Image (cartoon, rainbow, N blue to C red; front, side, top):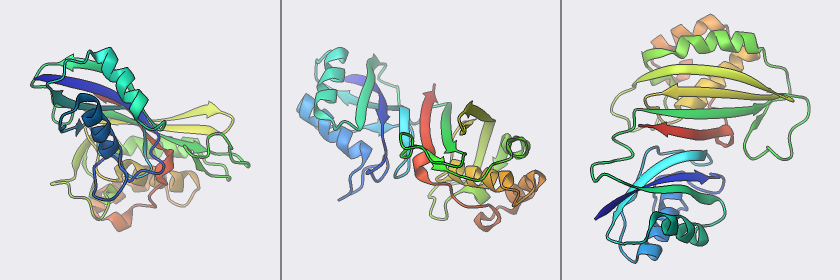
Length: 245
């Protein structure tokens, strides 16, 4: 049996997230059906990250085992001919049998995009959070520094999260001004809780709007209470950029 690693790009709008769910359109479900159709055998597809409904990906990683002898370039072209246009296989490679895209991941990079200017963007509307009033980026960067390190992120997890614990390590949070009002919040860490980056983003935006102080973030973390943090940013602005191994 071969073990095949995929790098996948997708637009999450219209999908109920990565994880397969009965009766709902999901990225995992759509991919699994396409792989089974191509290889003509049942498939168990393992994904590195369970992105939420509406969240996008440029570099989601997944793997599956197969008895098929279709070469990797044939897997790429075959799957892309079957999949809907919102889902694209960027690469495929044979990997050792022990490779597991979820268990062996050592880190992930997510990017949250905001359009911060008086007028929205027609082209980027499906991939950004539009905020018309100016944000104070300096204050947001001061607040973001408090997220770095190992913390209990209970205040930044969805209330229905099924994670066994809330200890996570964030290695960097960079807030980049890309021009024409586009702001990118790039977050790197070993793993993330459900809604964690979106709640972090909502809290940073509250700082940028002057609603809370940058130095209030440590107290929010220490509270270990979802009610202590700010709003959950819209899913459409979030994208899984890369998974590291």
